[in-house]
Length: 178
Ligand SMILES: [Zn+2]
Ligand SMILES: [Zn+2]
Image (cartoon, rainbow, N blue to C red; front, side, top):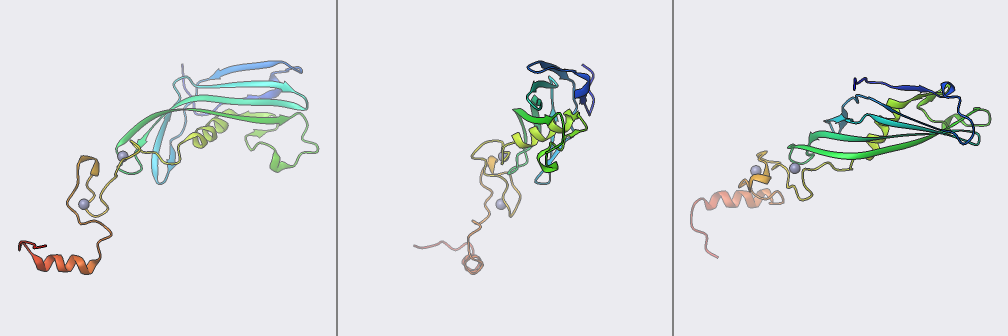
């Protein structure tokens, strides 16, 4: 299936009548998503599916896709791979009359639907708020940068007061008595 980075559907070409249904799969290449300064690559192995239902006053356009996302864990930066199901619906009125521009889809221009734009937004909205390799990932030590998934690094705990850190230095290697 040859891929491309954009897909458009002109609703006027469909000539759907009331109650009629249209469905088509589009191969689609999606641009990487930048989240929290990190880059996440998105693969759509099955492309995207677009359905159009002719309803009273307009068309109901639905775009859905199964995405595979690759990118760093937001805590330890290890590569994470996960799948997500993304779906979004837009209503496109037959006549813009009586409609506030703000209520109309930003992805529809004069009955031409930006399928790739809707798919990209659906994937972005479908991403988890926090992308982590595992729920309890301890991340990197903010002092030495060691990946704490591999074990503790020996840095003093962060909440340690600087004055106490100095006292510890004075103690040196002397045995500590309780
Ligand atoms: Zn992690
Ligand atoms: Zn450390």
